[in-house]
Length: 192
Image 1 (tube, rainbow, N blue to C red):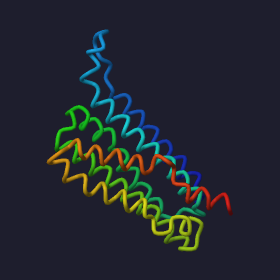
Image 2: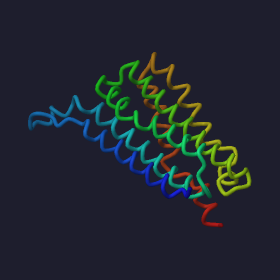
Image 3: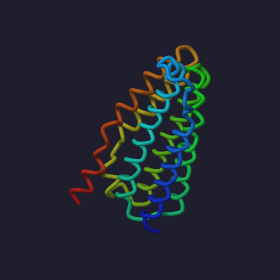
């Protein structure tokens, strides 16, 4: 199977997840600026999750562009990633609706950690199928950026039970690490 079909399906799932998230934003009743105040944590959690979905979408695109073909293992690894991404509307809404309370913030971080692990598994599954000298294998290398992100997520989850806003700072730091797209794969594809 070619990667085009997997990429199109994944694009559709991510687009639906983004749509669900925006539909969860409730329109305030009233025409004063003050009615927006309770929506600030909800909106900020939405923005953070939207950025993460954009990062996943961008890097997923490059990941599949580097893959030569898709196996059953790659399909399952991709579904594993999409499962965790599909939970973003729930964990995003729960954290935002509860003003960044301890448990919802920790669960949000856990969801992000599991999505990051799933992305790592997907990339490693593709590399295992195509070899370490493949386009993706040589571009990703040791994946320091990915491992650092997983470590930050793992540390931020227990911190959420003590200082949830500190965890949010960690969450934003992971977004900033990945906000500049990972050019390793893109540059490798350009050179080949």
